[in-house]
Image (cartoon, rainbow, N blue to C red; front, side):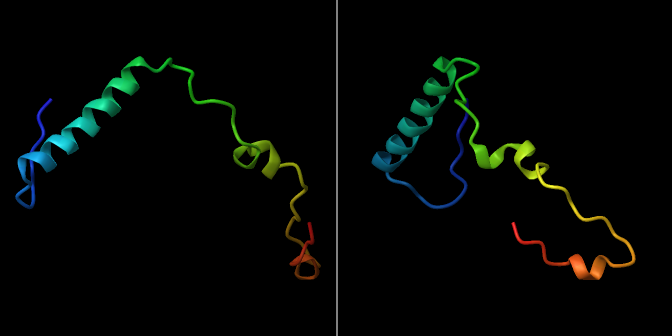
Length: 69
């Protein structure tokens, strides 16, 4: 792995700290099991969005522009 400093002039301590973080993240990602994402949150479930009926356009669709939940 090659890391290149694009801007600035970091001190050796700053560069060592940044590399330690990058290496720790890479090691954690390598040892994590493939299904370690955990359970999905309810707010991101697509079925929650499609649970309600969506109004269809039609002659009186302007009367249905506000649908309380």
